[in-house]
Amino acid sequence: MNSRGVQLASFLVLVFLIFPLIVIIGASFTTTPYVQFPPTGFTLKWYGDLVGRSDFLQSFIDSVVIGLVTVAGVGIVGTPTALSLRFGPERGRQVLRSFVTAPLTLPTIVTAVALLQVYYVSGLDFPWIAVTLGHILVTLPYYIRTLGAGLESLDPSALEAAESLGASRKRIFFKIIMPGVVPSIFAGMIFVFITSFDQVTMSIFFSSGSFMPLPIRIFSYIEFAIDPMIAAVSTLLIVVAFVAVIFMQKAMGLERGFAA
Image (cartoon, rainbow, N blue to C red):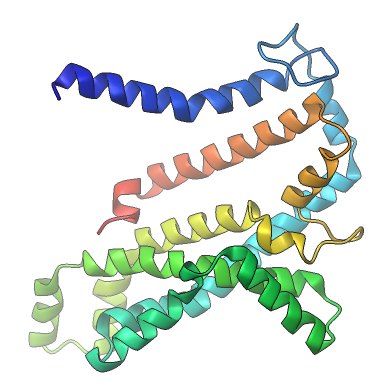
């Protein structure tokens, strides 16, 4: 395929990815009481209606808190696990790798149903704990693989040189390994937060009238009405995700964060 064909194919893929976002953003400004694209007129009414919805605000806060706790839990569990997979004894690596990647081999709904059964058997009445644990289970393998890619990209000669010069393992860890994988850690954490914030399958089993993460709130709302306020919510979420990606690119570079 010549360069013009590659450029055309790239352009079509880009349009395919971006056009739905343009439709959602445009529909959030329409003056009609239903989702319409191209929008008719221009209004910020739907954003004003969204600001006045305390239920959506509470769901947003719940999703942010769950996402942050999920990031903390995944970081605490996933970081030493990824280090063990890279520097641990060869004999146990394959078993550990199979264990931590097991959630990837199962549909999320299967994991959610299994966690729901454990939740009922345990007698707990804290659905946000169950949701957070579920999000950790779902996102942990992705964080470990992202951090693992950063660890694999480390220069072995730098580690060997530090060791040959008498540096202790603690010094090698804090002076060479950690600075080299900080971009991968942040990239993994941002990915975990976005995935947790957008998680529907795991959250829907534990939602109720008093506890409803934002994706479930949106899903519940569109069962009864589809108006441009939903497009306004979606637009704000697109902006948040876009800002997060821009921040990561400016702070450390996407290619460094996902280096292999």
